[in-house]
Amino acid sequence: MTRIDENQQWYKIVPGSPWLSIYIWIIFCLLPFFFIFRSSSIIEISIGIASLLLFFLSYYFSTKSRSGLVYMWISFEIVIHLTMTLLFGYVYFSIFIAFFIGKIQHTVGFFIMYGLHLGLTIIALVVGFFIDLDLFLPQIPFIIITVIGAILLPFNLYNRHRRENLEGQLETAKEQISALHIIAERERIARDLHDTLGQKLSLIGLKSDLAYRLVEKDPERAKNEIKDIRETARIALKEVRELVAGMRAITLNEELPRIEQILAAAEMDCVIKGDAVIKRLPTITENVLSMCLKEAVNNVVKHSSATKCSITFIQKPNELIAIVEDDGIGLPEEIDRGTGLKGMRERLHFVNGTLSIESYKGTTLIIKVPNVITHQVEEEHV
Image (cartoon, rainbow, N blue to C red; front, side, top):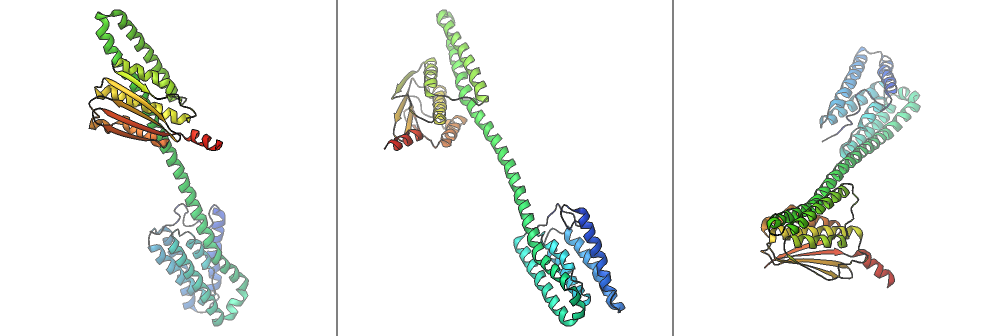
C-alpha cells in the first residue's frame, strides 16, 4: 500500500516552516494569473483558470488519499502541469509535484512517479522552446532552478521521511525492548522466588510436621526443630530481600549445607560425591548451578518418595557436571512440564548449560555448565 507522510497537513509545503509554506502558496497561487492573462484569447484564459483550479483541487485530494488513488491524482497534476507549461510557459507547478512525490514512502511508487514527472517536464520544456522560444527564453534562469528543484527535492524529502520513519521505528523498538526487559526481569524474580522461597517453605513444612510428631514423644527435639524453623524463616526473609534488591550471588558452598538440611528434614540419606569446591567458575554460572541444584533437591523431596539422594560433581577442563540421583518412584509426567524444571532450563540456557533427565528406578538429573574461565586460564598458560 502506498504511504504518505500523515503527520504533515496538506497545505504545509516546507515541513517545520508554516509561514514559508504560506508565502510559497501565495506566490504560486497568484503567479499563474500573470502568465494566463498575457494571452489574448478568452478560451485560453478560461482553460488556464480552469486548469489552475483543477490543479489545486487535485493537490488537495492527493494529500487526503492513502491508497493507489494517490498515483491517479499525481498523474492528473502532471497532465495539468504539462498543459500550463505548453500553453502559458508556466513550468512552476513542477515544484508542487516534486514536493508531493518526495512524500511517497513506497520505493517503487516513488521512483516511477519521480521518473515520469521529471521526464515529462523536460520533454515539455524542450517542446515549448520549439513552439514559442520568446515565451521560454526570458525564464531560462528560473526554469533551470525549477528543473534542479524537480531533480533534488523529491530525493531530499524521500530520504528525510525514511530517516524519520527509521528513527520512529527505533524508538518503538527501544520501548518494546524496555518492556521485554521488564517482563524478563519479572520472570527472573518469579523464578528466583520460586526456587528460593519454595525450598525454604518446603523445609519449614517438613520440619513443622516433624515437630508436631515429636511434641509428645520428644519435646526437647521438637523444640530444636522449632528453632530450626525459626532460623529457616529468618534466612528465607533475608534471601528474598537480597533477591529483590538484585544483590544475590549464591555459591555451592552456601547451598550444599542447606540441601543437606532439607534432605535430613525429609528423612532422606544425603550423599555428596566428588569435589564440591569449584575453582575459578564464573560467578553467574555458579549462581545458576546452585539455584538449579536447590530446585532439583526440592523436587526430589516433594515428588520422589525416595529414601536416598546423591549429588555427584564431575569437573572437566571445559565443563562442570552435577548429577542428582534418587531411588524414588521416578519423575511424574506433570512435573516435567512444571515451572521448576522449565525455570532450570531457562537459567542453564542463559549460561550455555544443559539439563537432561533420566527416569528409571528413580530419577537422575544431569546438569552441565561450561567452565569458561578455567578453560581460558589454562589456554593462556599453554
